[in-house]
Length: 479
Image (cartoon, rainbow, N blue to C red):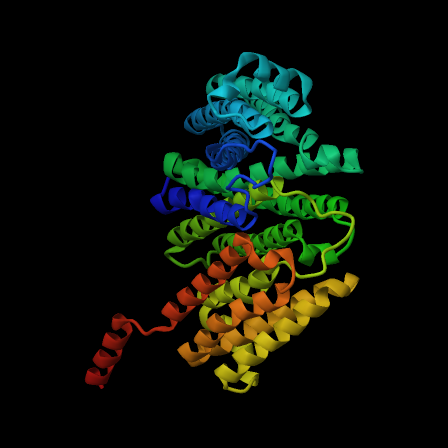
């Protein structure tokens, strides 16, 4: 597998830890009289869940691509699927003592008590789900190594999909009012995510391990990915609607902020999928550029990184309580930074001039636009909790204001406008949260630091490089 693709797989870990830090979920809660889980457990359990979901996705993806979509089963790909299933099984075992340590606030050594572990596995829904998963995943690890026929591989794939579906019976889905709907939607969501994420990685691996089978698998996976996107969107929308009572909770709760972030990542991934389909059409028509193979692998590298981010957000979401019956009265700071800074800054740094074309119709006063964007965002933050169904309109306003400010600053290469945004965003967040418990929490200021870091990266991208200046000098001399 290409090094950049292998590196992109881990991109979700820092994102997950950053989100959990904003939720104050990586340190023990200071509640007098109640025992608290060790800090090592609070860090180790999310990492274990991330790696578990990643191993699950790779198992499903390598079985799908190497065993079912290729023109004939690839032994090497199936062996890799077996190894990933073994890692999945090991991480499930590791999840048991970590869960005991978190639930009962025991040190890691004390969470290995056989009596306590047996009680977890036999008397709780989560424990029973883990036991069933261990049996199913163990079977997948053994069968994927030895099975080569199409029909037997379909059975192995169904066993792996059943194991991926099982967490839908535990967690938030088991506690919600629409238990059956929540369970089915979450289970399908996990299976489809695994097929899509693991399938993309498996395509890159197949191109390296068995290039002769890659072309057919890529074309078949393109149609499969389209189905995955549709199911992901529908199950994600259903799951969110079952856990949030109003659209206002999407912008006033930490849970809603993570849901919104996952939705934006899905939109980005759909964009990458569209580029893949365009490339396939060009290859079919014989009009693809000579470097299409390198372009395809580069797209997969970025796509895998964003998929890893989606897994990290999913783990963070699973460790966040859904909003209560009464919606909050202030916009979550993560929502403001996500819409007003993160999305516009990423678009400008990734798309370049294409993200700034619409600003040609706006006045070329980047500093004034930056101040106006901050003021408009402040007004939207004040009004959004009261808008109800129109909360999404407030999201559009915040995104549009941030996009205008950052796009015009990028077009004009105005470091001053970026500096105004860097000074203004901490003040804006403090003003929107003044008088509330969120005003002084460490998680709020982690979000502020994230905004500042993104703006610093944006400012660095606006500085002309030596290579650019050198090329201008060479052109002048040639003339």
